[in-house]
Amino acid sequence: MLTNISTVLRTCVQRNGTAAVASARTYADFTPQATFEVKKCDVHKLEEAPATEVVLTREEGLQYYRTMQTMRRMELKADQLYKQKIIRGFCHLYDGQEACAVGIEAAINLSDHLITAYRAHGYTLTRGGTVREIMAELTGRRGGIAKGKGGSMHMYTKNFYGGNGIVGAQVPLGAGVALACKYQGKNELSVSLYGDGAANQGQIFETYNMAALWKLPAIFICENNKYGMGTSVERSAASTDYYKRGDYIPGLRVDGMDILCVREATRFAADHCRSGKGPILMELQTYRYHGHSMSDPGVSYRTRDEIQEVRSKSDPISLLKDRMLSNNMASVEELKEIDVSVRKEIEDAAQFATTDPEPPLEELCNHIFYKEPPMDVRGTNPWSTLKSIS
Image (cartoon, rainbow, N blue to C red):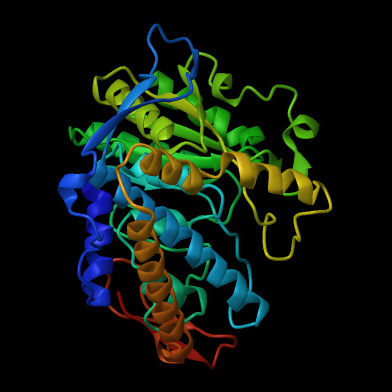
């Protein structure tokens, strides 16, 4: 819900030591809220659909804008640090898909649960991680969110289970979390995210079956960014209607570039789960600006013109910005001040991520087990031992 994103933003403000952004105009000059028309969702085995007229308050709009800008700038900085060989190994960037993460988080609670694949930086932020912790994790430093031992693909916060490197494997894990929610009698749900490339994995269909059989409070979300690595969805899937893949599970196809459309669809899906109707499937039609990973330039299987067309017509940040400005919900100066504040936060985090020490060798094997007594762990040879402390 909005509280989740408020927590992230409040942390950002406290960390920067800056006051809340104030426009040259008084708050009374702005429209406090407005109603917007969003694209109708395609539905599968549902008698109702998410609302197409949605309300956005000025406060919500400013918070969504700041969070999406933070994600965008964070990923661009990660790209820069990777090319400088400061970040190494696997790294999958999320720029272009910001409306998915922020829209989903705006519609659920922090007590709900979320698990995703390896394109996880944005979700780490919305689930409560800080830019400083995320950047330090990318550079493998002690102050990282996984203490520098997880890297890009393995970040965690409370009720956020990563960041998973095995394609599609997070989906059955997410269903297990949903089973725990139901077993413990909590009014909570589990969101499991995967891409269009992972959607053809057999374990996902097995998970659909169990989730439907047991009526688990699970939202399965396919972030369809049109390409599985370098292969277009048309070349890899006999059916690209991913929201229908659950067959007997209801589904929604959503404009994943519009944060308001994502938010309303996720609210609808969450209400479906909390009312005891079982799982629901969502397909978010989105787009990534970078390649699949940093080793992929992203232009060998699509044209630069295609990427630029999406940027110019469907960019999620520009769409929200235009809505707010055209409805007098913010001023150009106010949004520019947010941009400046975000850039400073990113630069400060990057400075920390390049100066914080790396974790020492003796901490390498810590946290293998949870709440277990210390134990010896064999190193690279039988005579090299390390200690594991929970």
